[in-house]
Length: 135
Image 1 (tube, one colour):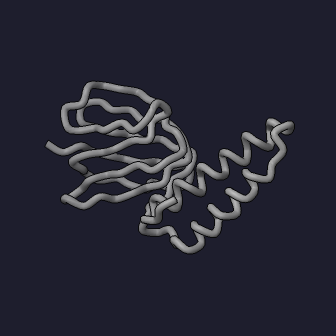
Image 2 (cartoon, one colour):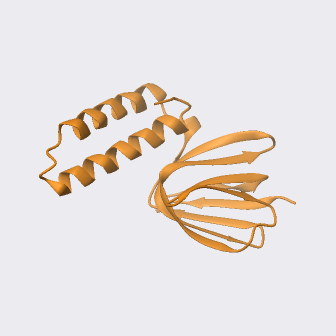
């Protein structure tokens, strides 16, 4: 029995198909979902969602949100999402390098700047990983 998986961002539906397995980047760590999973509502962190459909894994970068699992339906509502196969790895790596440099140079006295720099770095890392790169 397959899972009905739907990933919805404010501007588009990124994924709406059946899958055998889903790995979510929850705020408490990676969370694997298989058919017959118990009902669950969880917060999602910035990270990479992995969906196994037809024995192939598809990576999708998520920018935080929520996931609901119930009756073999996985509904994922996120602030932003992008399929890994649509991300240019070279530009994503440049974005990561820039975000890393910014995070390394920010003053720890400016707490708001530290939070923003870390968030930008997490987003850039998720895009690189979804595109198939490694950090």
